[in-house]
Each structure stands twice: as structure tokens, then as C-alpha cells.
Length: 273
Ligand SMILES: NC(=O)c1ccc[n+]([C@@H]2O[C@H](COP(=O)([O-])OP(=O)(O)OC[C@H]3O[C@@H](n4cnc5c(N)ncnc54)[C@H](OP(=O)(O)O)[C@@H]3O)[C@@H](O)[C@H]2O)c1
Image 1 (tube, rainbow, N blue to C red):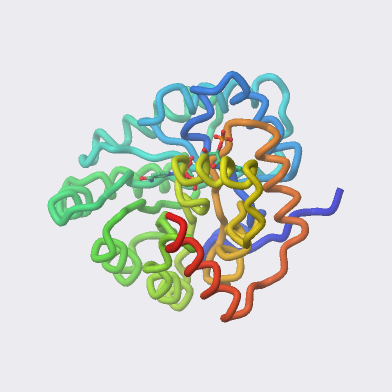
Image 2 (image 1 turned 120 degrees about the vertical axis):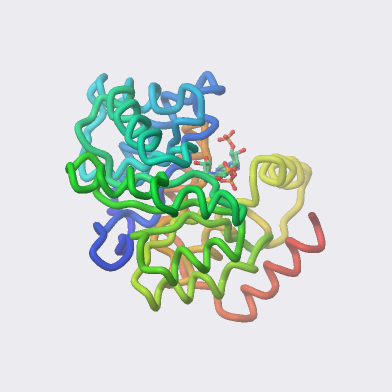
């Protein structure tokens, strides 16, 4: 099996396979555990979870305990706590639940309002807790996930985060300038919702099953994301092994979209959804 393409997770971050796995929904699927195992077997390294994703950390921990090879895994988890003590408590709980001594990256989860930003990054805020965990060697790098362009820009430009998690896809190209900024500043970029989210992905599957043969496919949506050189890793959510394998096949076969193809995919995404 060919190795997956690899990219740096920001300046000073590890090199990782450009295909990751979003494990948010894995616990709700009977095939969720098999999907995590399939991802690791395919060479995926970044697996995204969170304290908030009930059962997700535990399921990943189970896959690891049952002998899934831990080759270069860079587990990513997140805290919704906004306080220094709450963040450290969540890191400890994540490590216990995952059954590991260290995770690659720990994020402030969904910091999407000015108030959340002030609380989490100000004195006594959760960022201090994550930095303390990094100093203790429990966490390799610290980052932030957000749905706010303003917060993301502050996080990238401020120099206190190793990586950010943001939404980016042919459905949602608006974050492209932030990815450029992150590349310039050496901040890693983890792309969530690369397929536009589960609602659109499900509608897309239905459309393809009904005979649609246009360009809007999961493989082309992933190509769109990987064609941006500022992206470190895409983490499509997949709770079925068949989807994990299809995404790994796409990762092994993709070629960059040119500007015309990129615009055509954005136009098709806007037309259909
Ligand atoms: N930090 C945050 O605030 C935040 C917010 C949202 C998401 N996230 C992270 O980002 C990850 C991805 O986001 P997402 O799951 O919302 O959206 P997504 O990755 O755009 O789409 C996931 C959907 O695509 C389907 N899918 C995956 N591969 C497919 C394929 N090859 N063919 C057809 N369908 C396929 C999945 O189905 P199955 O599940 O049935 O396999 C699922 O319904 C999450 O898992 C989570 O880790 C973070």
C-alpha cells in the first residue's frame, strides 16, 4: 500500500499524513470502532476527538488497547473549559480515557465569540492551562478551533497557538485568506467539515446513488482542500470503514485542482446546496 502524502502541522509541528479522521460521530455508529481501526491501518495519523464528543475518546482508547498500531499517531482532543484549572483537568481526563501518556495536540474547543476568546486567552484562562500541560509534556502542541473569522485571525496572528482548526471546503471557501495567513505565520491548519458536514454528505450520497455524475463528489471535495498548500491535514468525519477506505483511496490518487476546476466545484456546491 502506498504511503499517504504528508505535510507539516505548522512550523515546529510534526509531519503528518494529509488525511486525518474526525471521530466526532464514531461512537454513534455500530461501525465506529472498525472505522477508527481502518483509519489507522490506512496510515492516518491525526485522529480528532474532544471531551465534548461523548464516547469518542473512549472508543479511540479501546482501538489502541486492542492493539491498533500506534505508529506516529497524533491524537487531537479539545476542551470546552475556559479556565486554567478546567483545561488542565480536561487534559488529565482525556489522557486517562484515551489510555495514553501524551496527545499530539490539544485545542480550545469552539472559541467563536469575543467573550469566549477573552475568557479562554486572558489571565487565568484555559490557554494558560494548555500551555502548562505542554510544559509538563502531556500535550505536544496547543491550538484552537473556531467558527469565527475574527477569532481565527486573532489566534493565527497572535503567535500563541501552534495550530488552528477551521472549516474550509468548496461549500465554505471563505476561510482561504486565513489559511494563507496561517501558512505565512507557520501555524498548522486542521480542516474540519471538508465534505460540508454530515447533512450535505448524506444528500450528496443520495444524489450520486440516483445517478448524478457531476464533479461534486467526496473525492473531489477532498482534492479541493488538499489543493490548498496551507492546509496541514483534512479530517473528514467517517464512522464507517467503507468511507474511511474511500477517503484513503482519494488521498492516494488526488491531483491538484487548477483555479478553473476550483471555481467550478465552488459553483456546483453553491448550485446544489
Ligand atoms: N471543533 C469543532 O467545533 C468541530 C465542529 C465540527 C466538526 N469537527 C470535527 O471535524 C470532523 C469532520 O466534520 P463533520 O463530520 O461535521 O463533517 P464532514 O467531515 O464534512 O462530513 C462527515 C460526513 O461525511 C460522510 N462521509 C465521510 N467520508 C465519505 C465518503 N467517502 N463518501 C460518502 N460520505 C462520506 C460521513 O459519513 P459516515 O459518518 O456515515 O461515515 C459523515 O456523514 C468531525 O468529525 C470533528 O472531528 C470539529
